[in-house]
Length: 316
Image 1 (cartoon, rainbow, N blue to C red):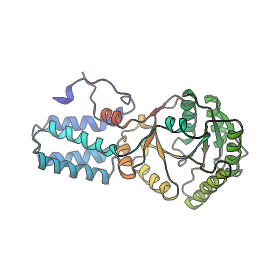
Image 2 (spheres, rainbow, N blue to C red; image 1 turned 180 degrees about the vertical axis):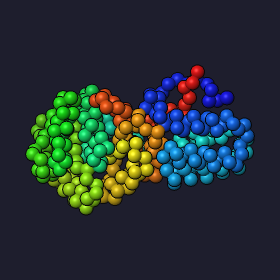
Image 3 (cartoon, helix red, strand yellow; image 1 turned 90 degrees about the horizontal axis):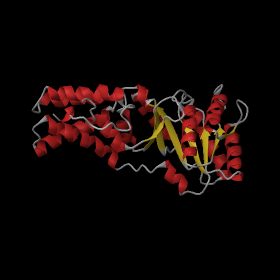
Image 4 (spheres, one colour; image 1 turned 30 degrees about the vertical axis):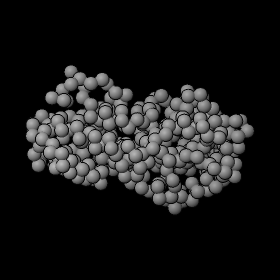
């Protein structure tokens, strides 16, 4: 059958191993037991989609379309069902514009200012270090602003990553005004003709009003130096939190316009389906995947390759 064919390993093969074991092989085993479509097969697929943390709304959409397609096109076998399921998930990605960050930086007036947001513990500081290293390898000259002055040791941790990436860091003392740090960073970026500015921010989402006011103040102050900044607001999420990641997107999009998402810790979770649900429900492009602890462990997201890996089989 189709899933016994050896396929070439994709770029996401290793990173999606746990998700694939949880989702693909369960789908495979379900279809191995059935040669014709039965009513309860759809119910089993629904359960498997939910178990992959694709989310209730997106799962219902996929299942409804699956049932309509079966009725309309008279699908007969599980091969047909499998092919449609993959196609239906691919369709969720079609209308989401996902221009590469490299391209946006290249064709925009410099410096290009990116504000990084996300709750504590999702890997925000690590992501800034990885992103700095990634963009520097692409030939861009960067500077980082340590505007998370609230969390103890946040500046020290960011400085370690900045040194690893060999990127300049602007910092002040703990509990300094975050907007002041951002102001100094943009001034330095302009005078030193930097291509990209990364601004770290606090992640204490439990104090939503305070955080909203702080992010708004940082934006206002940066506009005094570069009126159109920030050009991008990038949200960092932890894939292993599953449905909690959905809630974080909802909360942040209430008070800032999220441009793109970085999903971290994808390699260590069976909840990789959260990618599908987030893109479907919020229409926000996922720009990068954090795939490990090393500074080079950041990959550009490709929806088609992701889906292929989500469904691929690597048995001989």
